[in-house]
Image 1: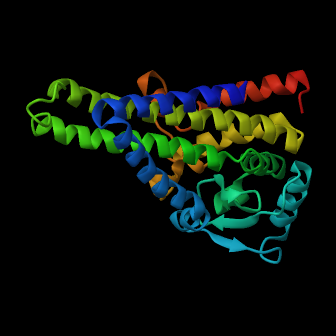
Image 2 (image 1 turned 90 degrees about the horizontal axis):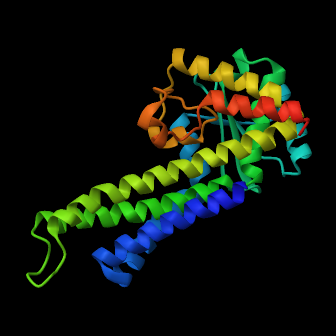
Length: 284
């Protein structure tokens, strides 16, 4: 079911790009913008581990620096059937965590100092298992593909706005400048909404698989509730571009309404409810 949903969302992004590109610049224009967006996002994908660690101010540690944490990650990654990731710690007092890297062989699991200080070991295991699940399912790749398509739509939209502002192009151009301007505003919003939906589906999958890796859905559910509460009280200084990687939104915002369409994370109460249902089914 998860794969089908992701496929439909990615297909929607692709269709939006092709339709918009065809309307504005024809097939060649759409392909050019797609290639440009792909180069930019794949570059980020390839160097994501170094870039994201820098955004969070994190440092790589070894088994001698935090032996209990290192042993926990090693034990859980074996249960997940993964190679040992790089382990890093970010100095933030807000308890949070993220995973990054282009593949399981080049991956990073990073936790904050606040997470190590405030969460009990059982819940900490659930958080780390969630991050290992992201690595196992190669969610960085899915997210990069979604960002590539959304970025290409955004570039086309920017070009379309200038065409509309400057009068719609040549005099024999049958495109309506007002319609082009509206499309240039609506299309990137739709692309971002779809991109955020991909991110939310990845979080649901990582929750379910993480609960299986840790062997305890309720531990992860409790951790999510705690992290959401802490995120609302303890600020985190991080580039917003890296916020979607964290297990809970570091900038925990308002709930409900149209803002949910632009959330990178599903509502925590929904994630917790799903994990409790998983525990009741014994699916772990």
